[in-house]
Image (cartoon, helix red, strand yellow):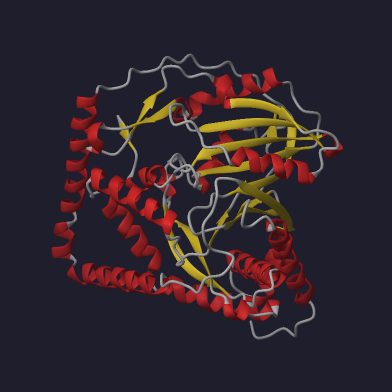
Length: 469
């Protein structure tokens, strides 16, 4: 019996009829689309590689343990793989409206928490595959890995027969409770096993404890409430979505010229995008704090095949008050380096590990109470979320058709009206921006202002006088 981690379970607990906790990826293709039956056969032939796609979440009686994964005895692939088409002319606005509707629908908790949509009728004879997966199943990096399991590396498709499968019976409630208690004992035992290391390596233990304390203190300071503005507040159940693209090679040129990392350039561009969004809303960027939650992967090399979430968080204030793109990038480089040195990510990882030791009944109850409280008084500590996931830098294929673009989708939650996901694929950097339909319908402006910031930086690469190496 496999239990959800505390972090995975938290993604379930914080979901309600307004905040939907699924992530998604949009794959587009230029060649004529396959038949729907062909796509069904393809997915059926790959399901043995991703057994989680035939499992559903089942609760433990009285929340005495974290939820568990169990085979769906009524698994029906036709429920999860679906088919639709855009009305002519199938322009980008029509597709973005479709994405908004698909992402506004909560996944069925009685079934495995994923869907795949074949969308025909995009302009120019193009078509798309939309993969929608609950965040309790995967984080961004694991989601990219799962997509690579479903698609091919070779343009010549290889016919594979589906592997026979029969669902295992769901364990009885009493067995779930006993397994939960056994799992809790194992978690405690692992923690106790570290005690001898505290004795034999006291200096290392003290240093790690101090680093964690500093990280927690920095996070507490960063969570102070910001002055109200239009970017944060209540949200509704409906979504809008927009996308824009930039060249990964251009971003790397900027990084080589001005320093920092690809992620630093991306954060500076997102800051420029939010600056333009605020100006378009007649708000003063110099008087607005735009604090972003930035997920940081804690996945180790030996966890590449693990599908569950392995993330910590940084809290970063986007420099929307800075107009010059190069100055904005320099400020990002300086402040991100300071954040990494603050051990905030390590502190977040420590808190996540402690969550595995907390009583599940307490965790689920507190989470639901917090969500209810945020309905009445939305939090003002975090304005947005910005997640950057490295994708494959080589082409992928679906039934012999080359995937030409890969656009991401990130969920938003109470108090966070806008979220930005960045995904790289085959030399292209794609930005997917999610917004609350009622309060942030203008995310298309944000998406294109972000990539325009990258264009500005590229234009400055050859103009700036080279500095010291």
